[in-house]
Amino acid sequence: MLNSQTHYKKSRAPTLQNAIVHFLAKKVNSYLPVGYRKTLAEPKVMAQDDPDVQSFMKDDEENLIIELIEYQALKKTGVCATNKAAS
Image 1 (cartoon, rainbow, N blue to C red):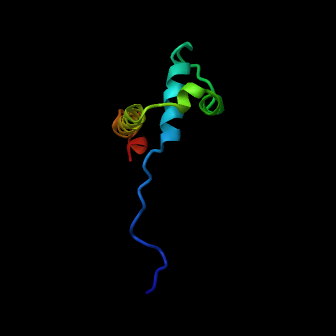
Image 2 (spheres, rainbow, N blue to C red):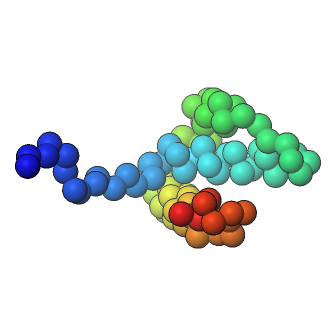
């Protein structure tokens, strides 16, 4: 039986743009009360418009990406409300 699907998946690593948006979202949302967040569009616009964000050093960029990877790992292995959410 022939199958046109592959068993291999390409891994999608976090990009610098995603790491910057995550950093800005965390920064903006830290000032809001519990249960409130800005939409994702607002940090994206901030990332494009802010010249300080565009001038990150190489070490800062690597740290932002590492932070995002750690956050994603925590979300993946964190406490889940139900067994279905854990799978």
